[in-house]
Image (cartoon, rainbow, N blue to C red; front, side, top):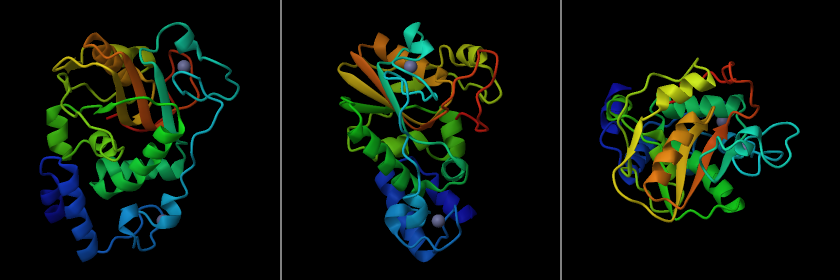
Length: 259
Ligand SMILES: [Zn+2]
Ligand SMILES: [Zn+2]
C-alpha cells in the first residue's frame, strides 16, 4: 500500500503514527496478520484478540541475571559466570514461537506499526512482573540510513509503550553494520564492536529495549557504552530471546535479520 507507506515513513513520533494508523485501520479495515479474521479492536492493532492474547509468556528456568532460557539451568548461565554479560539484569517477555516470529516479521518488515501496541503491552507486563528498577528507557538505535529505509525504529515504538521516559537519541548507531544473520557469536561480536556511541552522560538505571535478542552481542555492546557513560545499572528487556545457547561456532537458531 504505497500511499500508506508514504504517510507512515514520516519521522517516528509514536503518538502521531498511532493516530494515523488508527485512522487507516478505520478507513481500511485490516485482517489479523496471523489468522486472517477481521481485526476489529484497535488496541490489538493488526491482530485479533485471540491471537494477541495467545502469545506465551517466557517462564523459568532461565539465567537469574541475563534471562536466557535453557532446559536445566540453575543460577547463572556460563556467560554470566565468566563475566561476558555486560548488563546487570535481562528478561525476554515471550516465547519465540511461530506466531510471535510472524508477528514480529510483519512489525519490522511490513510496516505494520499498529502491532507495536499489543507487543508493547506484553513487554510492559514483563517489566512489571520481574524485578526491574530502570528509570529511563533507551531503545536499540538503528543506523539513520536503515531507519530512513524502514521509516521507523521498531524498538523505539516498543519502548514508547512502557510508560517510562524514552531517550531514543541518547545512544547513536554510528556504524551501519552488516546484517548479523548467519554470523557466529564471535563474528557478531566483532561486527558490532564500536557500533554505538553515547551522546551525553547518563546516570541511574537504564533499560535497553529491543525486539529480539539473539546472541546478545548487540545488547552487550550497547550496555558497555552506557556503562562507560555513567549508567550505574543496565537492564535489558526484549520481546523474545533465543533460548538455548549453542556452542561458539554455531549460529543461533533464528532466521531473522537481527535489525
Ligand atoms: Zn488472529
Ligand atoms: Zn546469564
